[in-house]
Image 1 (cartoon, rainbow, N blue to C red):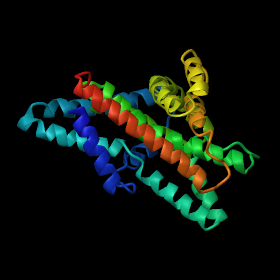
Image 2 (cartoon, rainbow, N blue to C red):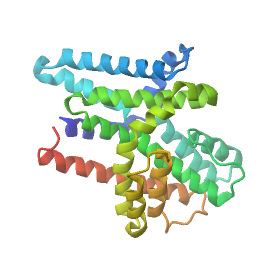
Image 3 (cartoon, rainbow, N blue to C red):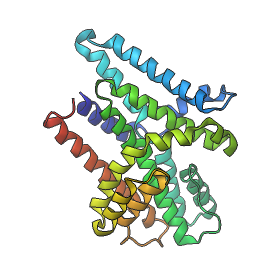
Length: 284
């Protein structure tokens, strides 16, 4: 049922998830605004609580009406947690602004896309476009590949694992947008996601290594297996940049398009691997 649900969710997400209505990040903002105390313990308690709610709902629906309600629940939850509806709008707005040489709108949309990790101050146009590529690659990982990973490895409890990851992602995004760096640090969200992202980043990274320049990317990937300190963002984007090495970093429209194209190829590869593993009985 995992593969069937995933395909339905991805199909529905491409069709009509174009804004905030079906975005979990938006739905949780009301809850996040009520939080007044930021700590690692509070973040873990909130995450475990939402995972427990999903697990209880799933258990209540198990075996009911030939599992049709459970399938619908899986699809609706997947639609909320997988996909970047609002971010996709920001990306298209950036391309429109860049193609019309609207510097103010372009900068505003680029700030939205690079909100989590930012852009180093004082960088030139080439460095800026490379950082924009990295942000787009990370968005694809955060909203598509990592949620799919936890949905799959969770097996029959995949929805609970998916909800837990999506909650952490939403909490980090909200803190980055509305709170201070100190409050974000107090919450422990970056440290938690550093651990949670370790395995999926390296699985996705090897796909980038194989798609791109393997002679350079594969040694870097093997080196990352023993690296516990480098940020997962840097590990993933470094490997992805090997795949983009032949792409010019000078055109403000084509440069981000190249990153999105590479991210799509990686997503398709991951779905194909899922399908093959399901056919051979590795996944349920």
